[in-house]
Length: 108
Image 1: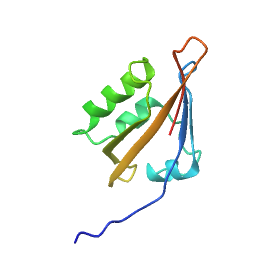
Image 2: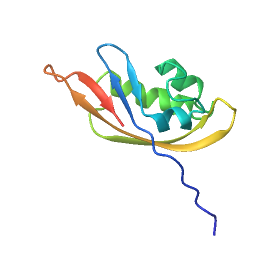
Image 3: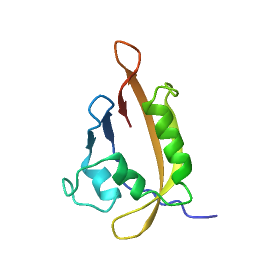
Image 4: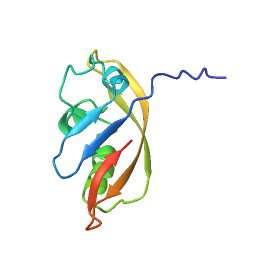
């Protein structure tokens, strides 16, 4: 039987209105950064996504922020941290709609 290795569990918030992110300390570490060491952005997230998983992640994320996906979501993918280590992660999130029902915030 293959050994299952678990690691830290990070969290994030993304404001659709401003395009700004908040990452927990563990999420910085998962990406190989010291907390506060970089400014989280979608570009940073995509840059650290394994190239084979990038099309699926960009499609799911695009569906979330443009309002096509308004239900909770989960996505397995690999990321390549700042030290070039491949990490297997599960992204779980949900969208909070604003008063006009357009996406306001994404949390995960």
